[in-house]
Length: 340
Image 1 (cartoon, helix red, strand yellow):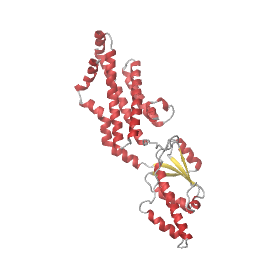
Image 2 (tube, helix red, strand yellow; image 1 turned 90 degrees about the vertical axis):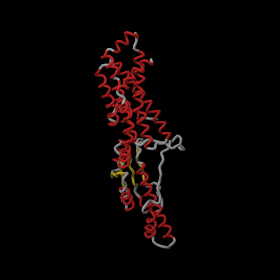
Image 3 (cartoon, one colour; image 1 turned 90 degrees about the horizontal axis):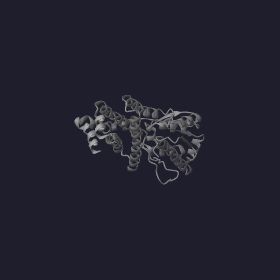
Image 4 (spheres, one colour; image 1 turned 60 degrees about the vertical axis):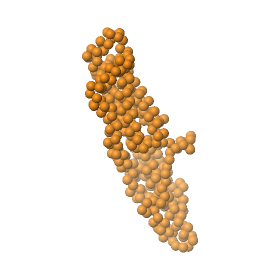
């Protein structure tokens, strides 16, 4: 067993630079391009639907201020259209400014002024929640100040409102922080990766999978050179040969994948609990994928065309999962995104 393991590892010693670069490629890419990934994610505006059923000065003011945010892209819609867009996943979420919004805010209240529409897959709507929450509290507190001062007979509502509003510049006086929590365990905050992080993990998964497929070419080369036939003549069995090859197959596949995703977690300062969960899940899914890949290759008789078929399978897994056009549950990339 150890003899054949050394045999497979010695292939890499002849030209160590190229194999080393292949193994470290995800780590190198993450180190070099992470600032680009981060800036792109931060600068990409999240599509948010707007349903303005109040059409008042206050509702228009809220929309005008939110439109200045670089984090969200506001899209005016009807209530029905907004709900359909959110459920289809065409937009992250939508909010409805209910009729009577200004009247309620002027009384110093915010209850039942906004209805939030979202799906289970909504993740980035937190940016819009923060912006909207800040604007709601800004108007409500200014209105309370105006009402209190006017009631005391010291000045008019409008003058007190404007004076109170001046304290929100240049930065908001009040900001809201939203946390997602489990309905079964509300005291525990739910931690999730951002959508762009999951996409990067899928790309690293694709790279490592294709690398593993090309390594299977070494078996074909041993068949063509007669090495495998000589092993069968001498040892009467090739079990040890294939076992050694399979171990190296796992090492050269899992190593770049693990390095790539953990570099992502390191640079993005992902919480350790989330890092551990994703490492266990992603490596488990990838290991199952490698077992299936090995089995398919051996089942197809180790033919040359089988490698191209497996490469197309890997690329198809990524593209069809990203396109989400049906039958997604068949593909390993989809399994990867379904972490419990």
